[in-house]
Length: 359
Image (cartoon, rainbow, N blue to C red; front, side, top):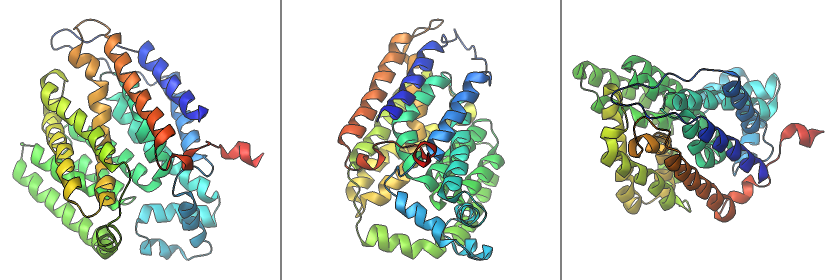
């Protein structure tokens, strides 16, 4: 498991070394420069996620997706449950690259979204660190399609924070081509926005209707039968829901200290309430798997809230290392517990890199 800890350690080093003092008053942070270090980390993450070998609980399923596209006509992608992902599988099977092409392109899209989101936070490297234990290691390396959808959704959220509702809807539509469940974020954005609300309600309602008709309705019976009908259960779902709920409570308590823009404040308040509502929903749902998978879209809430703790609780004008170290220790504990005790962590161990295996 040392590659995971190496990744975590590198991010922890940068989270400490690149801590920025909390501005005094209403001062703003300068945007982090896209320099050599950011580029190196981007390439490292893409390679580690994209060229993993037999890592993740659904590895054999993803290999099967590619093999099913071998010599299939390209129109077969329209019969695929997620069209964009089906296209990647068709290219990997018929043009070249196999499952590693699919995973690498998926990794690029996921990392793009993650970096856009983290670089928009006051402490971008600390945000990257918080993402390592679960969002990167478990989701991006285990749930390829939904990992891409979450990455693209994070770009959508940043566009929303800039007041660009149309761009938000476009990015969510793109994300839904990889995993249809991404549309769950649309209502939260619409109801959280007050400017031109009637136009936005109509636009969002129309988009949800179109996406439901084109992308979801044809597979609704599958989800009802396999998730709800079979009552599928996910071990550890309660812990993962709690990992979203705790930052949600912190956000509600400390929202005034977290430096939200006027455009994004309402959205994150609604997201926090949604994360808390997942607790009773999990208790009442006949399938914890269905709830668990939808709750993955709330993981960016963890990244946002925990990375802002030093600014929310620390002293203005100072580098609040103490609070940053606490966040690092918490994140390290999350990763240690998952790697050592999670029911399915054995599918991630040992981490193997395809080029080294091939050689």
